[in-house]
Image (cartoon, rainbow, N blue to C red; front, side, top):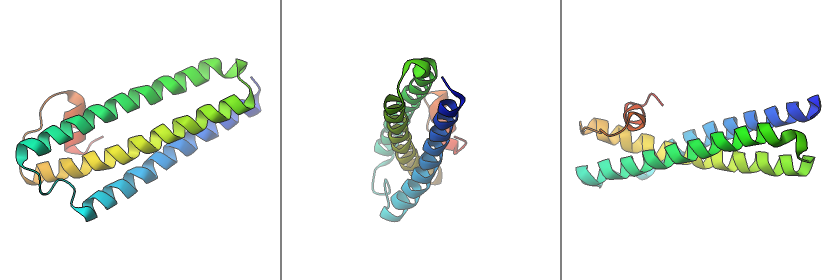
Length: 131
């Protein structure tokens, strides 16, 4: 693998991260303005948040595996194949940002209602807004 290819892969992954961050901000603003979760009862809100946090965990793990596989197989891939992989990873990251924004809105409502969101460590981190 040439240095140019490695630089292009790194730039593509950085761009995917930037797109994910923008998606998170847009999603959070959109879901706040539409009032997502405000009409849900407490138990449904907690279940909805739990399902969102599990979805984001699975998508995060899939994205990490895809990045590792891309790094391992990059020397044997052609430029078009690398481009397809990076675009796919970017799409997954945008989806992750969108779901994370949705979960952040639900977590904020749960904090305002003083609901206890338990479960896994991942859910606790998302519920406090640290992730």
